[in-house]
Length: 158
Image (cartoon, rainbow, N blue to C red; front, top):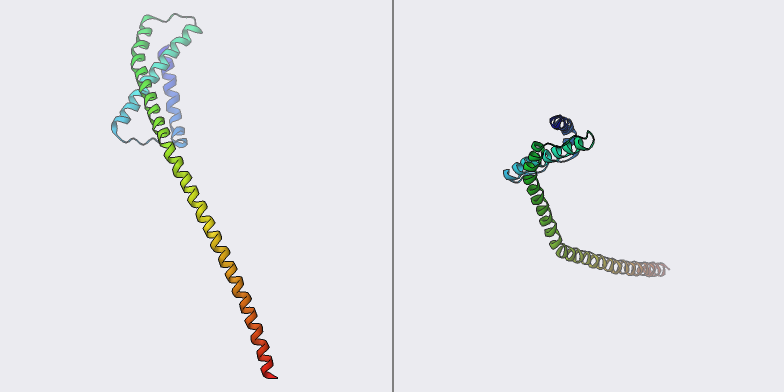
């Protein structure tokens, strides 16, 4: 009974493996210990959950008693599974704490970068305005010079 549940779950997992490879990127393992821990840890935790869920299902739905051997297996797998789950949660908490501790410096650098961009944008706008004013001044001066030249040229012909 429990074995049937495990076989069904393993068959379902093996059918889903090609789809999982298409939808999620694979984890990069930096060392072989991580691969070993994930493989062994996931196996132990999944076996514990599957066996406990199957035994609970049969005891509730089929109204069968959980045997002492089933309780022993659940207990033997439960100890390492709970240690693995605890270690994974501690690792997650450590990584999140590291992210949170970096957050103030990251926010400060983001504020500094935003201020630098704003200052740079203001400086560019100021220089563009000065350039446009200078160009307009030079254009007007050129127009005045051309008018003066044309007037003196006309007077010279008379």
